[in-house]
Amino acid sequence: MRTELMSGEAARIAADQIMRRCDELARISESDGQLTRVYLSPQHLRANAQVGEWMRAAGMTVRQDSVGNICGRYEGQQPGAPALLLGSHLDTVRNAGRYDGMLGVLTAIETVGYLHQHGIRLPLALEVVGFGDEEGTRFGITLLGSRGLTGSWPPDWLECQDRQGVSVAQALTQAGLAPEHIGLAERAPAEIVGYLELHIEQGPRLESAGLALGVVTAINGARRLNIIFTGRAGHAGTVPMSQRHDALTAAAEWILQVERLTQGGDPERVATVGTLQCLPGAANVIPGEARLTLDIRGPQDEGLDALLDQLLAQGDTIAARRGVRFQAQEYYRIAATRCDPALQSCLNEAVSAVQGRSLALPSGAGHDAIAIAERWPSGMLFVRCRQGISHHPDESVAADDVAQAIRALLLTVDEYAGTAGR
Image (cartoon, rainbow, N blue to C red; front, side, top):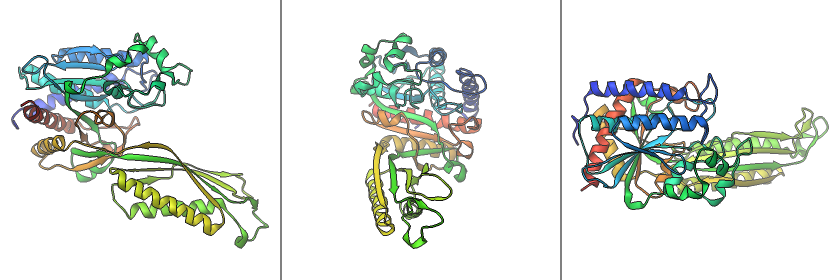
């Protein structure tokens, strides 16, 4: 590993450029005063065009693929060599922050630009991709861009519609793309050797540790369920306490068990009851039904499923004791994604060289790396964000942290390309 590859001064100059470009991209939005940029919108295509210009200035050949990803390629020592893929996404949630996704794309471009400026070619080619849709804001389906590269679009995705009734197929056509050609975005396994994604942490652990950078071990798997406790509604003033079948108190007891059992297990697992609705919903009526949602996440599927089994068993036990009925229906499941050990090792070594030590941590949020890891080795580098805030206009990162991030990313790219390119 060439620790002298980029000086601190050069990194700070690059970081300032990245921060300016984040600001510039943030101005490409469907509404003034807040950042919203959704898949295949005019704003998405404008962002692609701008990012494509920056890619060309960094020495890359540029194309937009058949699902709307913007892609740049920097050749290796031998033309046509397999590539190490770098990138993240360019779409946003509504009223978003300016670093989620964009920071990873722009840091990757600056990494390639530094190599190009210094005439450095690596044993591998480098490709930078700005994925078109990671958030799923427009059509309610996620990872459209990255699943384009892996060729794993479900056939019914083309029929999904946005709020205005525009289908994915129609949006592709309106953007100048052909729905029948989405398969052309798929990359052959031999063309790519691995994927590196830099992203803001979207959590508070790096800030708590006083560190700018951390290495992701896994992207958490998730399970989401709709829960119903069904009891018997009754008059709040006439039914004795001993004869009640109160759905809400059963649900309340279960919610506390969700917290207790999750806190008592693996500290990397989390559980959230995010919604609660009582029926009939009157101040003078005992709740006859309580509807709620459960979201649980963790870096290992086995432990996550074991926790879910515990929570469901507790629901049955509480319901039986209180004379109510417990129902649970899972409506969403995504497997945990382990990051590649070799990429983790390169990232840990690079982060330690830059900031003195490395911190390993899981990602509680989803990323394009979930899709890419199904086909290629994938790794992630996290950058500290203030108070862990993301998906919000207050999202903030420090230029000094970005400077450390680009040095670590460049060192990782250099080391991994040297190893994998042999």
